[in-house]
Image (cartoon, rainbow, N blue to C red):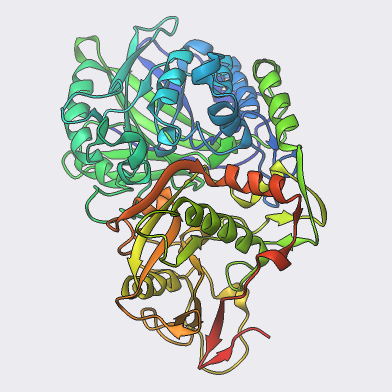
Length: 595
C-alpha cells in the first residue's frame, strides 16, 4: 500500500521537564486522524543507572549528558502521561548486553546462565515496559547461551531478521513483531517492527557464532521482510542497529557495516527507521526513497540513554479502514536533569550494589601513578602492563610446542585516554578502566614482512606533519581515512611490543615504519614471530592485514581483563621497572618528534 508522507521535522535536544510536552499533546483527534508516539533508545551498553563504575560516582561529562535506563524510565513515564499510554510504544535499537562492569559481572563473574537470576538489563527494560528490541553486535560478545537467557527474561520480543540459523534461511531470532495500538475513540492501528543488525559479528565474535548463526546482508533482509510486514501493518518501523554512509571496520568478505540510509533509499514501504551502532546524536535525518519518492525519517538517539528519540507518527484513516501515515517528526529528549525512575532503581538495586562492591576490591598497589593519557602518541608504562601480561601468557602456553623458540610479541591499543593506576591502591575498577572491552587473548604466527605491513596500516592513525615547525602531538591523531570519515578511533591504533621501531609522521601513510628490529637486528621479511592479540582484532575487526588469516597458535578463551587482574594480584606491586620497555617512538626525518 503506498503511503503519502509529508514530513515535518523537529530536531531539538533540550532537556525534558516534568511539565506538559506541548499544548498540542493533549489536543483531541477526530476519529479519522490520530498521532502515535514512538520512543526509542539505542546503544545502552549495560547502563542501568546513571553511574560511572570506573570513577565510582554518578556519571558526568562536559557536555552535560546523563545516562542509564533509570533516567530513560522517567522520560518514558512523562511522555506516556502526556500522550496517553495507549498511543505510545517504546523500542530499543540494540547493544545492551555489554559495556559496563555490571554487564560483565553478570556474564562472567556470576553468569545468569548458571545462577538463573534475571539479567539486570532485562529487569530494567521490563520495569519501563518496552515493546520491542533488536540485537546489536555486542549482544554476541558473551555467547549465544547468554543471549538466549536474556531473551527468556524480557517481556518483549527480541528481533533479528538477518540473524540466521547457520546454513539455512531460517531466522535465529524473531524477524518482526506486530503491535496493535488501541487508542480510545479510534480504530486499532497495527505497527509492524522489523529488527536488523550490522553483520560484523560474523567477524568480531566468530568464536561465539561460527557454525551456529550467520548474518545476512541487511539490505537483502529488508527487501525480504519489509513487504511482508507492510501487507500486515499500517505503520512500518525498522530497528536498524547500524549507522549511515556505508562505513565499515572490516573487510569486503562481510556485507556493509552501516547501510541504514541505503535501506531507506532503496526499500519501499518503510515509514520510520531507528539507527544506531555509531554512537551519534542525530535525532532527525530524511532520506527519500528512490522507488516511491516518499520521505523516510531516520532517528538516532544518543548512546547510553543520554537521549530518547521521540517520533510522532501522524495518521489518517484511508480506504478499507486502514490507516495511512501522513506525517512524521522527531526530536531528542535529553535525560539530563530528570530524576531516576524509582521502579528501575528498585529492579536493579541489588545488581548495582553487587557491582560497586566488586569493582572496588583492591588487587594491588602501584609504585607510581601510571596514566594512559598520552598512550596514543608515546610509549607508556600502563599499556606495557597489558603487553607484558599478554606476552608472558602466550609464551608460557607455547612451552613444549614446535613454536616454543619463536619470539613472542604483543599488540595492544589505547582504549581509554582516562585510564590511570593511581600511586598506591589499585582496584578492579582501575584495571577495568584501562581494558574496557571484554576481549579474550589469542596469538597468531606472522612473518617479518607481515609485521611491517601491519604496522604501516596502524600508522595511518596519524596525520602527516610538516617537515619543519612545532607539532602538537594532541592534534595529529585520529586521521581521516577511507572507512573512517570521523577519524580512526583510538581502539584502531595498534602498538606492538617486543620489537623496536620508529614512526616517521612526516612521511605519507604506507611509508612510515623505520628501523623495525628485533633484539638489535633488522627484522627480515621471512623472520617468524608469534604475536599475542585480542580476539576482536584477530577475527578481522578493524580490517588489519594478515591477522585474520594467520595461523592461530593460542586460543584458550581467557579474558584479557581477568588476566590483568590476576597478574596484579600475583605480583602485589605494579612496578614499571619490572616491565616497561620504550620500544617505539614518533620521529620526523629521524629525529624524535617529542622532547
